[in-house]
Amino acid sequence: MELPGLAFAVWILICFYAPVDGYPSGKVREACTSMIPCHGSSPQLSPEHTITVNGTEFKPGDNIEVHLSGPDFEGFFIQARDAENLDSPAVGSFMLVDQRLSQLLTCGRTKNSAVSHTSKAKKKYIKVYWIAPGDGPKHVQFLATVVKKYKTFWVKIPGPIVSQPNTPSPTTPLHTTPEAISTSHLVSYLSKPFNASGCGSMKFCVRNPSNCDPESASCFFLSFQHEKSSVFIEMSGPSEGYLAFALSHDQWMGGDDAYLCINEDHSVHVSTAYLKGQSPPVLDSENSLEDVSWRLVDGVLQCSFRRSIRLPAYKGRFNLDASYYIFLADGETSEGGLIHKHSRQPLITNGIYNVTGLPQDIGGSRSPRLIKAHGALMFVAWITTVSIGVIVARFFKPVWSHSFLFGKEMWFQVHRMLMLTTVMLTSISFLLPFIYRGGWSPQAGFHPYLGCTVMALTIFQPLMAGFRPSRHAPRRQLFNWIHWSTGTTARILAVVTMFLGMDLPALDLPDPWDTYTMIGFVAWHVGIEVLLEIHSYCLIRKVEVIEDDRVQILQSLSSAEAEGRLFNQIVLTIYVCGNIVFLIAFLAAINQI
Image (cartoon, rainbow, N blue to C red; front, top):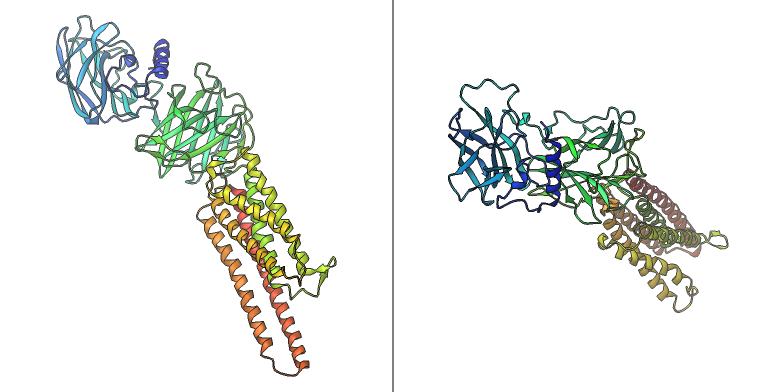
């Protein structure tokens, strides 16, 4: 049985303006009609507390002993109502037994017609007396709302029914179970997981990974099904804390219409919220939502609810017949259902969509395109072009010293081309996060600071190379050391910066895969350099031990050079192929997020 329209509207108004701390003093007259505390969450199912009485019949003026008992609870609210019309006002009056634990309230025109707590001190048992009125209904049922803690409560727990003597059976079924009492806030339990049937044909779906099965333990799923003047919404995903989606006018958090399914002590409540900037959402009353259901099995949280397309009476609720970016996020909760900031970037659709329009089956990305491009270009620059350029300059100077390209030694031209490519890729990549963020991001930790240092060193290297002394100039040795140390510092800092960047929320590569792969690349590069160093040393020692005539020495030198050239070229080929494999792995991971 639903609340009368006027009473429901009054309750909504009260919930929006009542203090968010609840009613620890028990002065809950505002909840006289609905018996629902304005705590901004859904009531629980399957009550843990019971109401008992010492009789089944009453006459006007009789005293009925009423008991409320169960596990520890902080607050309660007891009334007696016409059992054939539970939305009617409270009937009769109460008399207290222990004024330290309970107090009398007046609901409507009937004095002392309800009982509530005096403080939030924990209690297990309450006893009061109900005094039957002279003009009472034929059948009276006792109801209780019990608050275990702020967001854990049960509404209108049905108690025993007492009747006047010799009264006929009621003309309508009496409410004797919690499921029989229906308000717009009661929730139900989903008996089975959601499925993707109808996605793209009957309902609008967002899935991550694309085309995943919502019955899977790794699938984030959100669907909207247009039904006349309302939309039925399903949301599921692997989360022990909360799932949330938001409708936004842009791809930035703030000024958004959000909906959260929050796990609190293995029970789920659904709330709405209006997001303001980067601040944590302040949960609203969820009165705009109907037919709330949930399921929590094996770490997968699922909830569903219905919402009217237009809700002009609710501030912060967007009209569902317009187009928006859709955010889908998950995160952790602490005791009491307090939600924490999501630990990774939310899934964001690539464009704006009207969920009541043509049904579609789409995906999204947890990393913005500009950030993806930033990561991809940095990987190309510092995994391929820099690394190969360093190997060429260090070990191919004697091998390609007699080969020329565009009038210069080949090793130098290849080295210069690769390094200039690195400068170009790094410069472009460096600008992309600033374009995306619109400025500096203070939430990125040390990554941007190290990135700026690497960028400065990257620019400094070619500028310094432009003032390189001639080969036999006195300062050439000093230049070589500065050039080598600057480049080596830049490479080391670049690797550290990439390690930090891979775990940032905007580019959250799979963990620990990303760390192990980057460690593998570093070991691969160091191993190749060590191998080439050992080979160069052995080759030099081989030439030095030759003690024959000059012709034999020249022949041995030619043979050693040929051997060294072949070995280096084979190792370089293997190294380039290995770097390409690492690069493809990173780029594939970036494309999947």
